[in-house]
Image (cartoon, rainbow, N blue to C red; front, top):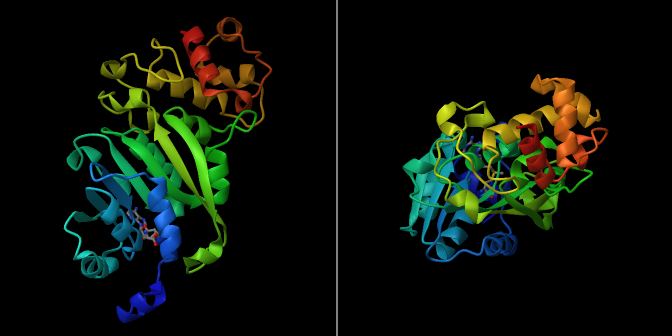
Amino acid sequence: MHPRQILDRYAITPKQSLGQNFLYDEGLLARITAAAELSPADQVLEIGPGLGALTRQLAQAAGRVVAVELDERLLPILRYELEPFRNVELVHGDILKFDPAAWFDGPFVVVANVPYYITGAILRRLLDGRPRPKRLVLTVQREVADRLAAKPPEMSLLAVSVQYYGAVKVVGAVKAGAFWPRPEVDSAVIRVDVDERHLTDHRPQTTDHETPTAEHEVPSVVGRPPSVTEAAFFRVVRAGFSEKRKQLKNNLRHLGLADGVIAAGLDAAGIDGRRRAETLTVEEWGQLVEALG
Ligand code: SAM
């Protein structure tokens, strides 16, 4: 059924402020579900089930689906639509306050047509959470998809923050006309495969990559040498991107280190200080952080 017909029946109008653009093409929803490569052993987190169209497909492919919806008005629709699926748990709440540890006892898969106004915040919260998702398949704005999957010299703080955890690829494009109501921008489906080594990392999270307390200062992994902590990594990356299009050696002054220390660190990492942050790979950031001590 068309989303408009369902909403009319309940006398509900979509809320733009909640990013309510519904997908209803079953073929497209099946392709999104297939991109997640789900098996009955998988547990899925769906963000914003809306009217339940994607949820139904996920419920048929996975062992368990936890679907978190903020809009209370949609709950009666979701309860009705999802009633036949015993493996769906509907949660009324804000995904930005969702605690994965209360619902999952190990790595899970995230599949969602996300509310675009919080794409970055969702990625930060889930990737910095415990347990972590092992895979994410997300429908996002086309422009954001391209930024997330960017390579040097087009990197951004967002790209490094996600690619640090795993490989990002654009699975396919979704035209604005596939949604109702139709959004102003085109979309794309991205898939993030979180590196295995990040999935066994059970240390407490460093909320929004803030400076951690001493107990967080445990060496960890991927895209950086083992002596580099996650918090140190993001402190340097944030400084590197602090002012647009400036040379790295100037932006790194935001770390509060002496110019000589920065120059020696860049030198030891084999990175030319005149480069811009946008040109560095995740691995180069790791080498730089290690060299800066
Ligand atoms: N999954 C449905 C689909 O594909 O048609 C709906 C997707 S719609 C783009 C985004 C959904 O996220 C809406 O149902 C909206 O109410 C919900 N939403 C918005 N903000 C949210 C939040 N902070 N936490 C949980 N759900 C939210």
